[in-house]
Image 1 (tube, rainbow, N blue to C red):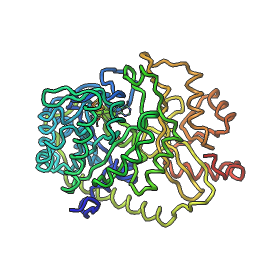
Image 2: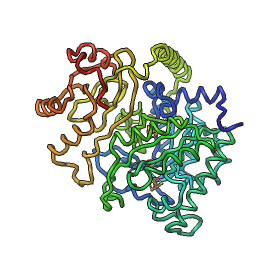
Image 3: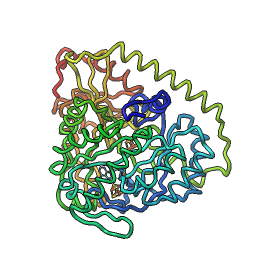
Length: 454
Ligand SMILES: C[S@@+](CC[C@H](N)C(=O)[O-])C[C@H]1O[C@@H](n2cnc3c(N)ncnc32)[C@H](O)[C@@H]1O
Ligand code: SF4
Ligand code: SF4
């Protein structure tokens, strides 16, 4: 199969995968199973040791599961969560640095919950060695994190790589990793596997290099490019170096640039934990404690199929309406930030938000621009109790191009500060799209705010 040729079967899988399809992410849930603690490389941004309940970022988990425990948990979740469509292994380390646990887990999931898609997220170092297992198990989605294709850039990201008993450092380490990543990508794409490439935007290291990465991975058959911002992980090398996360505008500009070059770009990544369960942005792991899982729960396959069939119809209808209402490129737009815990609803108090979804609207159509994390929350402070005033200023600067902020509640202090900064906070509940359109109409500001600040 040609890399760029997507079969009907693949189209259908994408339409149910919350990460590959922006529409699916409103309705379909994924489950990450944390069965892979070890890693075979070091990235300067990653620290899996730091554990903090407030943290929601990749590499963080409450507990690592054995394949037996993972099976129990997946069965329990599938019995309760009808919209579960994807089960993936994404850490907390690298799934392919723990191949026995990873593939044993996938085999169990396939046996007991055959209707879910399997998904794997890896740094790609040993991918080429596992292609047969991936095909055999029917794993249809693989994510490879590729931050550089130039070893001189890569050496600033990866201090070491460990392969077959040998530790590589410096340029040599980056060279080996990059060649393996590109090799694995090409092999999988040629076999019709849907490959998503993750790249972390690291200002001053690879930000200017990512268009070249995007071009190369597209040539090799990647389906989707997911560029996410660096999160300054406490205890990481980049924290010690004083590196900074990119500004939302810089990330947005880069995503736009890659999109213009013809790559399909993911904009709704929530940079989930390695044990996240539920709709994107709505982590329900705490609702499914392992101890509460039954030994052999009844999974009603017919009910799951009917439920998902109805979801598909809803998605098709939304896509049709969106196409009809397609937002005019040059129409004046209003930028709206939304505090949400997921579920496609305005349901988060401003003070509890750790991220905002940002949309543009012309008053008739609503378009997701991306996710903005609040970096200041756990910004390298071991107790996560940052200075409140500084945190508020950071949030205001992150939302400064927005005209309206929708949240389920907000205190008087932040309300006044946001107002002063030209962002109108409105307390709303319910569906995001409806709330955005209603708030824009409702607002007597409408005439005054019909030109986007962004
Ligand atoms: C925890 S990793 C697990 C899978 C695999 N080890 C990998 O790196 O691709 C999942 C994703 O989180 C990203 N990630 C880890 N730490 C991060 C950080 N501090 N900032 C941004 N992305 C990060 C990784 O680069 C990867 O794309
Ligand atoms: S490859 Fe993944 S798990 Fe390993 S150090 Fe990098 S981000 Fe962390
Ligand atoms: S981290 Fe991004 S790509 Fe991975 S499951 Fe979450 S939203 Fe999807």
